[in-house]
Image (cartoon, rainbow, N blue to C red; front, side, top):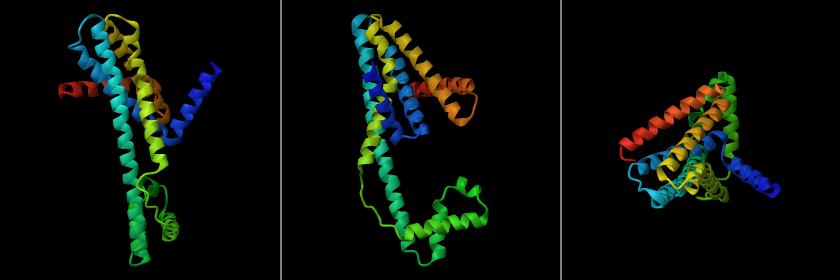
Amino acid sequence: MHATAEIEQKQQKFVSKYLDPASRLGEILFGLIMVLTVTLTAGLTVAEGRHGVRQLLVAAIGCNVAWGIIDAIMYIMNCVTVRSGKVRLVRAVQSASNDQAALRLIQEEIEPELQELLDSQQADALSRSVLKHIAQAKIATKALTKEDIYGALACFWLVFVSCLPAAIPFFIFSQPRFALRVSNFLLLVLLFLVGQKWGQYAGANRFVAGSAMVTIGLILVGVAILLGG
């Protein structure tokens, strides 16, 4: 038991190192919605008996794996895109005709929310500080880094593990439709818990946030099914 707890703790540290809380909750949410969509759709044509259980089990686990791989690839693509944008900014600032042109480039990249917290003098001082740093920066041209790979693995692992409860009923129950109902119930509970956690981070009412997440999740699942997803 102690060894298992230690492994779980290391896994949590690994995921939290590469994914911020909002990203972690987003990964779990999208994974749950995708699995719920697949199991509900598969439930419309599922066969009876053990064969039907195997069908749903393969659908649930296959969805976990597929969505985890897709999310991992999207994570890498996003990292490469963000890094390329930073390289372009550094090159543009370093090749600007004068300091004013360079400052304008920097100000366009600074988050508007951050600028709203500062008065004009503080915003200008921040921009000049960034300019001083960028002017001396060396451009890293690596397209892919070790951290990108680790982050992608964290995405895959989080999506896959968080959706595993949906597959558990198919290991336990021999009646596919009953197993499907239990699986969907567990997915709704997980959606509620994700909503509660989101409400905690956002400073909102946790029960309301959890209920809203279940409602939104069901609406998105309905839209996906109607559109052939």
